[in-house]
Amino acid sequence: MTSTSGNHRHYHPPSPSSSASLRGCCCCLFLLFSFLALLVVAVALVVVLALKPKKPEFDLQQVAVQYVGISQTTASSAAVSLDIRMVFAASNGNKVGIKYGESRFTVMYRGIPLGRGAVPGFYQPAHTVRRVEVVIVVDRVSLMQADAADLVSDASLNDRVELRVVGDVGAKIRILGLTSPGVQVSVDCTIAISPRKQSLIYKQCGFDGLSV
Image (cartoon, rainbow, N blue to C red):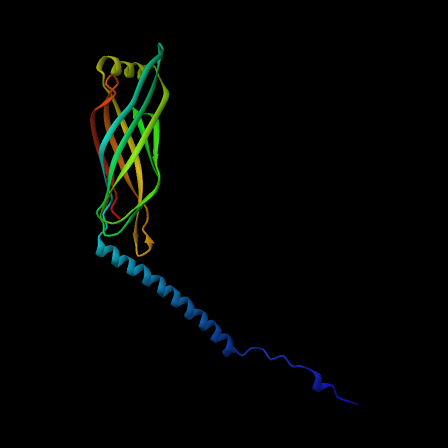
């Protein structure tokens, strides 16, 4: 009888030393990537501390009243239409660039929102000043009762309508190809306009932001 034991293949399980080597290699790779990530963060922090980045600054340079229309629609309501063009100077005094997101501005009368304007996002290089233009359009927005009476009185008797323009400007600092967490620069402006002369009488702005 012919023996068939020579045709059988025997399974040899991996030795414990091979499994241990594989686990050790994975641990080494994990530690290596963790170290590299920590190194990148540390370098970025050192650069941030060395450069001491500052918040961007906004300065209201021009306000142009392009159109003002106020009409009493009923005994207890009034409609207001308004076109305002505002020009800000965005100043970046940092040694690195700033990336701005889309910014939105709202014009209000006695706390009531009348209209909005938006500025697309843009990138500003280091040590530059850029003009930022905002156009806010109010199209026959109705005010009721006491607010309507105040508006008509301000326009017809005093020839002075005081408005408030508020907005948030989102900004991020770019360092070594990395983008910092976003910060907000709040814009809060009070302006007074003359409906008869279609002109600006008074303006004052305040800005508040967070250092990055």
